[in-house]
Image (cartoon, rainbow, N blue to C red; front, side, top):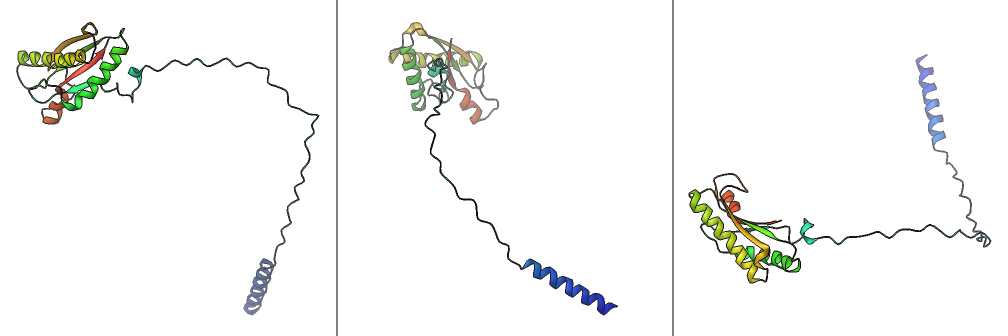
Length: 176
């Protein structure tokens, strides 16, 4: 019986394998026939009217990637001299204010946490005045600029290390 089942298995396997090796004929796709366009059928003209889109010019002050997005001028320790890296900030905002006489700013002078309250208020005022003076030199009328000191009361960064102190030694330009 075992020989018979082995023989039946071999015959069945051979039949399956021979069936798989038979080539399959794939039919060719139908040929593409081009037909001329019927000239009697023409598309209807679109008679709807489209209202023009009203676009407002973007105020450069509102552009988060624009040159006016940076509104802080940084200072060295115990200094109120506008550094070279702060001059483009002053120049860009000055040019904007000269073109936009109806806009005005508040320059807020800030210090780091070191030093007494009176000293920091005086230093913050000198920093705000340094930015104001640089802007008036570039043609901004004094009537468009107000300078105040916040001393150490409005830190940008927390911490008692040079990285935090460097971020807090600044003058911020705030548009009214």
